[in-house]
Image (cartoon, rainbow over all chains, first blue to last red; front, top):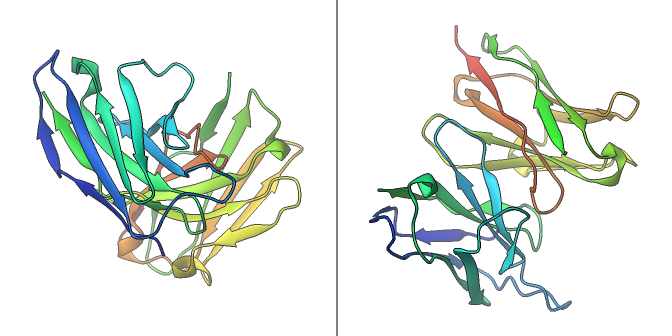
Length: 111
Length: 115
């Protein structure tokens, strides 16, 4: 199985400031169709996860443009350009290039 | 809009089975794979498997291969996940999540396994 490793485990941020989360995979997530199958989710307290970013850098419908995904191969980053209070929760990366889909351990973001 | 509504809280004894439902609306169930994911208390996300709603084909995580069955009823737009031989470490919130991108999630079903 592909292992997804996130860092840091937790992050304390100031509203209005940027934040960045790293995710590394044990195998390349670049498919031969040119797509990179890494996804980012935010799980707010008491809620199910919600999709933020799919296929490396595509923002899901309704996701604010302060969220962006980047990276290549095995190294990926989720960036929040200006953190808002509503962004608190646990962020997960996930790979789905081949089964089983696997998740990173999560990064808890606090204000 | 797309909605996935799951069945309610379950409390089971060790060795029992549980069947969780996920009723979909706002889209055609047969058009999208459905995943099942669980989250133990205070822990991360664990994929259990998926079902192809049109063919009924399944792909289960090896860990659950002999204990889980995923089904669907296209007439009611509902997907189901049954887990057998429950143990205390199966206590978790179980989620259904649509498609390869897990783009929509149910609200979760808490399953507690305790004697």
